[in-house]
Length: 298
Image (cartoon, rainbow, N blue to C red; front, side):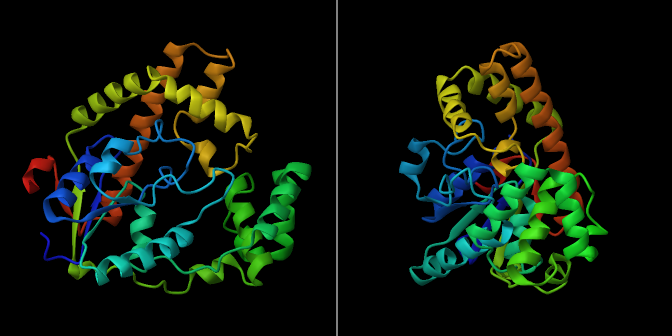
C-alpha cells in the first residue's frame, strides 16, 4: 500500500474511518490529514469526533482544529491549505493518509471543483453585517441586482449560498456561477492513489452512533466547548453552528430541552447525516474501493 502516492479514506460518520487511517499511517510510516469540514474548527473537538490528543501524539495529524469558528471556510481554502502540505510530504517521502467524510473536499483534490480566489475578511464582514442588519430577503434582492445568474439558481431563503455568491461577485467582479464553470486544479492523481470507502452495515453504523453519542453527552468537555463557542455569539448561519449537536447542546445548556432529548436529537440527526453521505458517495465515489470492515487492509 505504501507504493501509492497517497491513500484516501472516506465513509459515513461513525464508520471507523479515523481509526483505519491511523492504523494504515502507523503501518506505512505515513501521516494523517483531515478531510472533514467540521473537524477543522478549533473549538468543537468532542462533538465532531475529532481524533484525541493521544491519537495525535501517536501519529502526526494535520489540518485538525486550526480554523477559528468565526471564519467561513470554503472547499477552495482547504485545497489551498492541503496542497503545500502534500508537496512537502512528497519531498520527504512521507505518504499522506487523507481521511474524512466531506465528499466535496475529495472532489476538490481531484480538480472537480473550480478555484475561486480567496475573498478578503473585509468583504466577508461587509456582507455579514448587511445580513445582520437587513436579513436574508434584502441580501437576495441585492444578489438579483449584482448577480442575476446566481440568483436564478439559488433558493431565496438559502442564506449561506446567497452570502457566498455576494462575497464572490463583490470580491472578484465575476459571478460564482462563472467561476464554477471553470476547471479546477488537480492536487491528487487518482491513478496514483489508493481510494478506500469504508461502509459497514447500517446496523453497525447506527450502533456506533448510539455508543458515541452516549460517550459525548456524558463528557463534561462537551459542555465546556459549547459554552465557549456560545459565548462568541456566532450567527447560526455560520458553518460551525451547523455541526450536529451544537445548537441542541446550546438549547440543553439553556434549559430548553432535557438531556434525553439532546441525546435523541444527536442520534437522529447523525443517522440522517450518515444516510446523506452514503447517497452522495453512491453517486460520486463509485470508482473507490468499497469495503465493509477495516481489517481487510490490516
